[in-house]
Length: 353
Image (cartoon, rainbow, N blue to C red; front, side):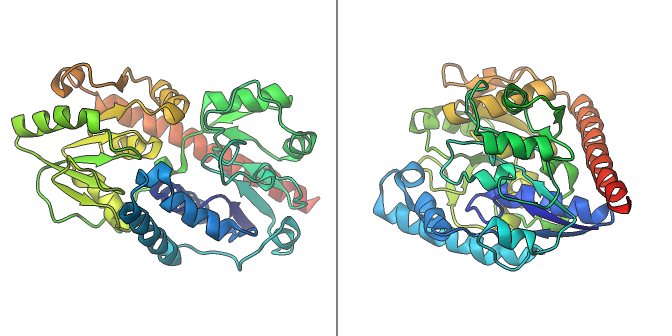
């Protein structure tokens, strides 16, 4: 059986790169041919560069914008680690690739308010059999109405899953179908073979989409008390000892593996802190509140957002029980793999009829 994955693997974002690789590796591990669909609608390349260079990520600084452009180029050049289809520009061209099944997701492909949103990620226009794996709707309201085309596409799918309760609620608000809750694909794959360590010993890792200048003093205080350096990845941060803003996925993965503490405002930053059994601080970024709250609930964790009111030592006073977390990761990952297996079986049985 040939499987295609339709997601934002091309996005200039480390989480997008990691989850795309993880899902593809898992599908291949289960015994199927699998490609990431190189879907590039008109204007996508320009939009990708704009998102890397724009004010949201660079703070309006021209030098940071140039660094954003360089970072985006590095992401694009790193796409060779994936098995991809030829470049296609429409649903018709995707159908012509001849897959037995297309997996839609993961990531915020169900977020109607995202700059990269395209109805095709709901399966609109596709004739090939589709299923979803761990899409997210981001901060969209749970009672948001999607289009009739999207509803019809969801009703035709062989299986539907979501990455969080918020997205599950949105789907079930619009269609009467079962929606399985599954883990992000990054939990399904061990990335050890890809990890490249940074040339720094004993450090706090900061991975964030904002500079959090108001919190710099608190982090530096903690670093001084614990004799740690502060290392930022993915963007330059003025209060970090060292910033690696232009690095590949391999260095990004290695940075989490070797950190003493992770400070992040990112969903995937939190995921990789959990995967690497690290204590972590979650900065309160409004556009990620739903996703991270649902992640904490999924793993039955009481880790709240940090708003700088107390010291980091005080915030971390309740230590994480990683023996229990590992058990929960295994339980939920096994259930998620079973979801994939059952969906694949449905497609193969239907093909034999």
